[in-house]
Amino acid sequence: MAISKLNLPQGVSAHAFKSPVLLAESLALNVAKQLSDAIDAQGTATLVVSGGRSPVAFFQHLAKQALDWSNVVISLADERWVPVEHADSNAGLIKRYLLQGPAAKAQFLSLYSASANLEQAAEQADRLLSELPVIDVLILGMGDDGHTASLFPNSPNLTEALQVDGTRRCWPMLAPTVPHQRLTMSRALLASAKHKVLSISGQSKLTTLSFALAGDDVAEMPVRAFLQPTLEIYWCP
Image (cartoon, rainbow, N blue to C red; front, side, top):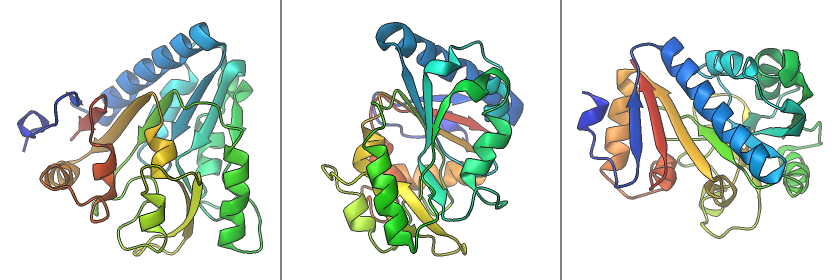
């Protein structure tokens, strides 16, 4: 299957690359341009990224871009509820690969807190995110089950987290097939981003995306909430 064969909604654009390195380089240039334009227009820029292994090369390339990093705010679409020092911490990933060199001057808003339980951690993150400026650029990934951020099918709180007009910014979430409890930005907050990118790799992700495009049950495949006009899709084998 080729990404050009997908039945994309009008207004959704797709970019195919021959390798993960080429995708990372192009995405970093695109994001840097968007952030630079936002700084020129309003003095600051806000970037929300996803964690996991896939974005590492993108983070490394983005950190090398010439930006006024002191006027950039960075946060995470979702987080595993583990300390920053934990190998699975998305905040730790950001600090190791993105907040390096000049990019270390960026302000980072972490979703994690060492609260008594996951609900309290989500409530604290929700309060923190009330200080988050308008999101200029959002980078999402997608799992083979159609989840994005930590909006997992069949997870408790999913219905509330997927509300289009929900006012809560952060929800506690459980990933059915992986051990860690999660924190995730709500659909409403993620959808408010001015510029949205879905970055995926591999043929299995194309198959998942094709299935997502063929239906409209957002709870079944939460990524469907973002397959709307203005979305950019970046893909490589």
